[in-house]
Image (tube, rainbow over all chains, first blue to last red; front, side, top):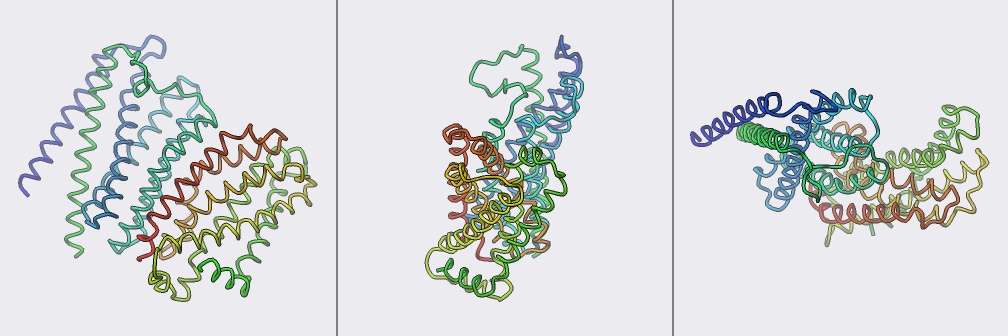
Length: 221
Length: 217
């Protein structure tokens, strides 16, 4: 118990330190982008959030499958505790992308492929959380949510391709693409620091949320 | 077995199908009133309108999938069905597909009559798109219908869950329908049809594998 609390406190401190470092790097170390100017610095929020969101939804899938196979409530708590920050980070991605899009593309929103599929992702997992709120009985809630979580995850590639063929304006993915990244080292380093910071923050939120869920479960019965 | 039972109940009560057919007629009026009398506008929006009609009818139909069991306290009967639970899923799915096919045929006939559109030359291609699209909608709809059947606010929750999940089916079906209705060869929509088939397969596999967990409760 004490060890767990200590671990989560250390994780929280690390997350704060990394976030400060990320902030410092984004504004101090990373160079001003020549074409877009300072606006481009939104990227250090935008890209790490979306990567973290994907990690979160992968964990929702793992937790869902784990629960259906073992019926241990811990797996369900993992799925829930990953889904909430996942939706949050997807929201941050969309909002920051919107703010970035206004000065660079000249519009808050456009029905581009990546934007649309991220929005669909947001809706799917917001629906997942809504569903969880509608059922009181833990086992039934966990089973229903797990099925939706699994279908949602299986759907991600299908959504991705359908929307991609539908249209495209967003720049192709530069980091996860097959070619070596064309990004300059300071920018890449800043991105990496922020990515680590966001992942740590997510891990901290996840640990805290699971802790709360566990307490809720023990008190509920 | 499950299909047979549902068809029999439906044939005797006729409650869902009658209402659904009437609903699709009403939808047609809504489309007409909201788009105005210009034929060109309706023609341009036709693929989207068709699928809007299908999905709205589908939302009503799929949401009711397990209502008969719930209202008549026969849920345990389904749960206690001997053998593989996925048979119940496939049976319910087949029933839903059948209902949707009836609704789709009715909607197509109504569109043909009211908007003077000749679907005959496009029929084979259209049938292929409709079959794949309907299977996709119905496979997710049946699964989610079972999940939400026992829940509070299910008539609200069901569309909120289903609509984002079937976005790919909708995009692919509308695009493929557009290709078909433009008179192009079916091969031009091949990419969309493949995507639809892949989506159907994924939904079916997830549905078959997870259905027994849904049914327990």
